[in-house]
Length: 275
Image (cartoon, rainbow, N blue to C red; front, side, top):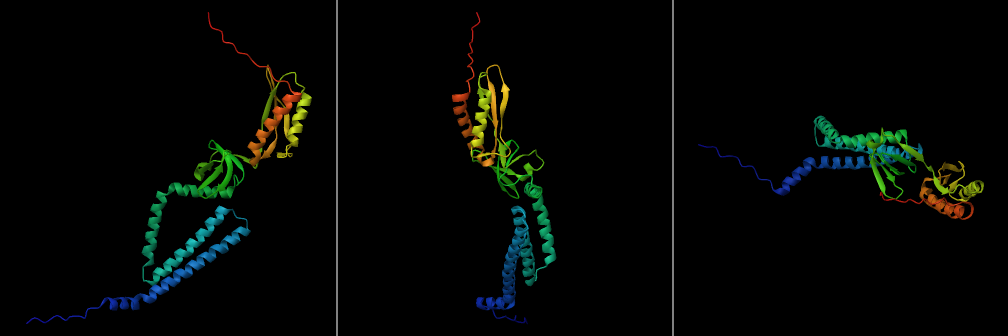
């Protein structure tokens, strides 16, 4: 004779939720509290490290990387502790993260090379923000040095973003914060050169945006069969390079050719047809 099966009382949804809350409620609350405390500690540690690095004059990219790294370390440690509250096995999780990190590292080789190159630029300081540099066939004022790229502002106000891995190891021409202008004017052979050079030197020296130290160079730089080239080479701030060059050209042409210089003779070219 078959034995009747014992029937267990079915749990309602309310009873099931209450049972889960009793079993895991304290663990969930503890994990949430741990994560909140971890976030607060990460923020506090990051701010403290940022202030300390600022007082030591650390470069902004290095300071930002250090602050973010410390916060990530604190958050990862907090996450591990929170998962431990739920009974997770930490060793397999860490091993899985390591394997995933290795795969991500291979996939992001270009990004990591930019990061390493950015750290090299920040530590070795081949150029700084505000300096004028020329490399890879482009030139401009350095406006930003970040961990992954460097941004230049071209004289036409366009922006040039260069990956840092393209900069390290290349020939770099750093003009600094001062550039030397080269303004040339061609005059005739019979010009009064002592008066002409004195007038050119006076024009350059009187310009408010021309630097007096080092002193500007003024002299004859080329002689041809029809003209003599007078060169004016003052130093100016990088930001004033284009404006001062235009102003000097206009002033030199107007004053020198009107008062102290002879215009070079014009050449006439005739094409004769072969008979």
